[in-house]
Every structure is written in C-alpha cells, then in structure tokens.
Figure: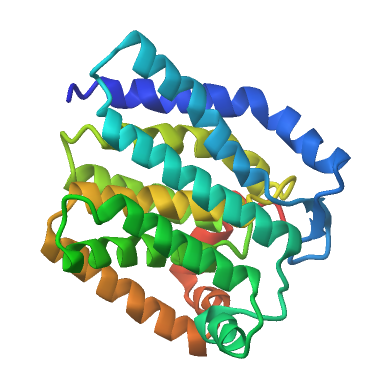
Length: 275
C-alpha cells in the first residue's frame, strides 16, 4: 500500500463528517434524542452514528473509482461490523438503563431472564464477529479474534464517560496500530475513521453532543478489526489479556477516579475540554 493513501483517507473521512455533523446534530435534537451528560446538561446523544454514515461516501468512491485498491472482502466486513456496532449502540443510547453496568450486571440480569441492552449488545457483537472470522480460520483463532473485537468495543465504552476521552484513547491506539501494521491496506479503514473522529472531536470536547454507545462501539470495532487484521496471534492474545485485566479492574474500581488521581492522566483527560 502506498503511504500517501493514508492522509487521503484521513481527509476524506474528515470532510464527510465535518459536512454532515451539523445536520446529524439537528436531526437528534429535533427527534428528542437528548440526555443529561455527567454535568446534568441535556445534549444530543448517539451522535457517534455519524462515523458510520461519514465513511460510506469515501468507501463507495474508492470501490467505484479505484477498483481493486480496497480489498473487497475486508471492505464488506468493515462496513458490516461498523453497521452492527452502530445499530446496537443506538439501541443502548435510546433505551438503555444506566442502573445496570458491567458484564456482571448485564449477564446477571440475563441469567435471571431479563434482557438488557448491554447484554444484547455483547451477544450481537460476539455473534457478528464470529460470522466474520469463522470462515477460513480455526475455531480457536476465530474465538480469539471475536473476543478481541468484543472486548475492544466494550473497552471504548468504559472510556466514554467524559467529553473527548474515548476519542483521545482511539487516536492514541490508532497511532500505535499504524506503526504495528504499517503497509497493510486495512489501515485505510482505520485512518478513514480517524478523519471522521477528528471532525467530531471539537463538538465532543465542548459537550455539544455525545457520541454515545453508537460512536464508542464503532470506534472499538474499528480498533478491534485492525488488531485482528494487522497483528499476529501472539499480539492478539496479548491485547486480549490486557483487556481482560482492564475489565476486571473496572468491575471493582472507577476508571474515572483512577484517571482523576493521576496527575498526567488527569491532564490528558481534561486537555481540550471546556468544562
């Protein structure tokens, strides 16, 4: 893959998201999709659905104008998982209860016969990931890949508790993955979403709109796919182990409190925020 294609993808994602941010925000406000944020301010929620719709025009242009440049099978897989995670995120943003949190809470309710939006999201993403990874892979590797994607998605949800936090984590992870998977065509999808996020981030930092699960889910899906497609089995296993530890930690401790108590992490967390 030619390196110059990455900034082209970044600019394409940025331009499409920048041009559609205002209409999407008004769509949510006019439809009543508003919710109090952590400060009690009622702002649009689920605005991160913009990421999926913003990447469609550049992907279509790439497929039509540059046939063969984008690997078609990976392109379809990328759009499928992005659409699925956006959909279950919108469901969670619209009807999810904040009284239940964490795997223990959601699956505890499920074992008692009560379906929560969190459990629905986890099951749908796990099933969708297996649909993508089972063909052409051993069952063990497919399970590993699906687990990486599912836990990456949920990890981004864990970070999306303050304006801009999930976006900053995504951009940092994207930089690391670009280095780790340099030269692979699948990085085009990552940079395309990076561009869309950069257009969205000022509104997120200013608390004019929340990306919600619709956004953090899709960001996590893109990171997870990039890890699966761009890294070997050992790295994927290491990433999975790290996310398992993160989830065990957050079952007992507040991630926001951990960040607030660390001077460096707190500075980075508040950087650019207008609260």
